[in-house]
Image (cartoon, rainbow, N blue to C red; front, side, top):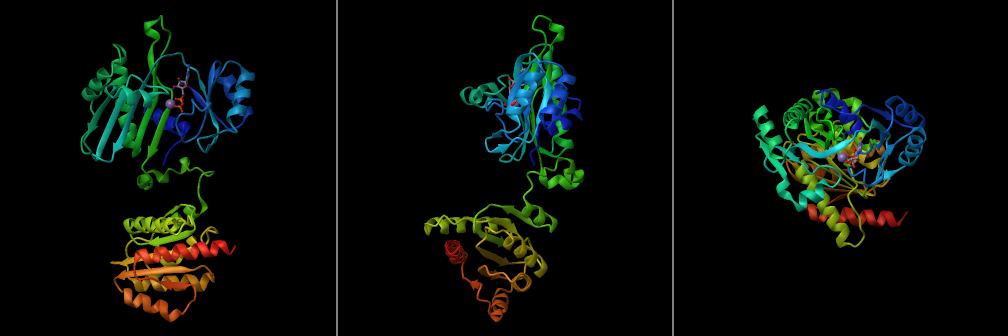
Length: 397
Ligand code: GDP
Ligand code: MN
């Protein structure tokens, strides 16, 4: 789960990482009020869950109330790289002397944590890192290890936080690590971590987190009261919400073939098979969703799943792909019939069963003698048929 900057700031504040004062605002009236309270100049920043807001015109500096209002009115209606602006952060503007980049993230390939830092932070960090990879310092933290003061100081030294900055930089790195661990984050990034102050007054200089990006591990939500305060009502997909209420692993994909299977791997392969079939048939038919009913699913779970998938008006056909292990195909067949009874749905369903009680499951389906129920022998065949039926149904609208 990605957080907005204003939410990420809350978690950084929990570790006392220095940040400019700021207020979240949702209309130009609130922006004006916040700006008056913080003083000028202040920065008005689009709140969207995507980077490079600055380059897209989503970060602007206001020098007075009128400018603040004008900028709010230009930023609030924006859509940045496909993300609708959700509000703005009004922040004290700081005098930037230098911009650093620091992040801690999960490194999936090496199954440990990565601390990344460079003295070339700011909006061009990716380009500079590409051209001067040697300027980016990387430290791996073993999954069972910790990040300690000495390592943090070494890291800070290696990217050239000069003199007085080194200790503060190391302190901030350690606080980021604490923030990362306490919140089950997969990413804590500060860019820029800015050196701010008066260029002629050494004692005024310090480090300050001017922008933060935090992603949390959704699998750990249960340990954090579900992070309810970060819930994004404007973003929630109604089908995903309903599926979550039933404890189902569902992802809405917006194609025409509903896909239900047991096991994430099998469902992923089923999605690929449907996309492949759509391409091959030249119809562009695509999967409508990912839905994993998990191991040992009951008839009730299957019935709930089918109900959710069929309630999506874009769905023209459904592909049920079950390899019975703990899950019995018999139970799945019962669930399909239960749902069909309840829903009285007229959309075609293509079923492929294999493994535990496959023969029994198929025989239950055959006895139902429902013209919307189709059976295929292999995953490939089933995907082809589901894609074909979806395309025919779509043309008939
Ligand atoms: P991003 O483009 O989404 O990463 O948004 P940032 O919040 O990082 O802002 C982009 C750039 O705007 C920063 O790299 C800074 O150069 C500039 N900026 C942000 N806050 C301030 C500020 O308080 N003072 C000044 N002078 N520039 C700022
Ligand atoms: Mn930034």
